[in-house]
Image 1 (cartoon, rainbow, N blue to C red):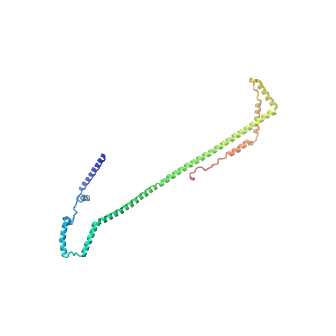
Image 2: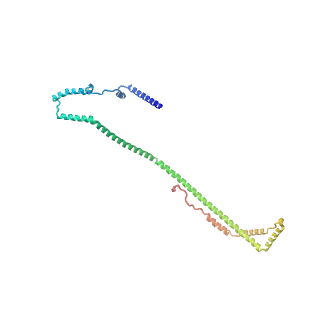
Image 3: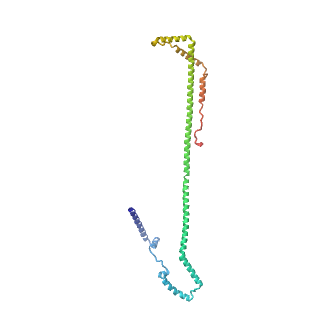
Length: 297
């Protein structure tokens, strides 16, 4: 509070110094200067009394004898005739004076109140219109940014469309790759199945030929039996000698190879089925959708 009082006193002192400087500046002007004349009107109190008031004759103590001195000779010499018209004039003047002195204030106050009410209503209307104008200006200012908002919205939609198209394209790439991988796995399985079928066919044929040899060829059967007895008779230190059964298997395998080489090209049923199945699997994958396209939205 002490700081506030100190600040207020300093501001008052500064204001008084400014007023004193302005007064001194105006007083230093010429006598006919407008600012100096206005200042003299404010500082010098003039006597505004005129007419009888100058001489103090506006009191009733002076007005009554003056009226008697002037009125009695005027009536007697018929300068002033007190007839009905004079009385009517007096009544009219009394009425006007009464209305001016008694009723005038009330009427003036009523008219002032009425004008004040009208001014308040007009001010309220002006305030309402001003609020509406300010609201309209605010709405228009917001509307001015609609273009930028629309641009931002369309830019976001475009970026989303680009991202969506990229995702769909990548999805199609992965789906196409997955389809290719599945086909490659199918081809590998077909190849492995064909290899196993060819191997099983070869083993079956060789095994069948060996069994047939030892069943029909007594010499080979006896030789194999003799070699087996010799090995068993030799004990742990006995030597294997010639492998008769292995030789028969080798001969059967050689015969199968020679017979297979004589077959015409493309006549192997396993390879024919393999080629057929591979051709069916190797067909190009069918694209399920067209992927992403930002212009197709």
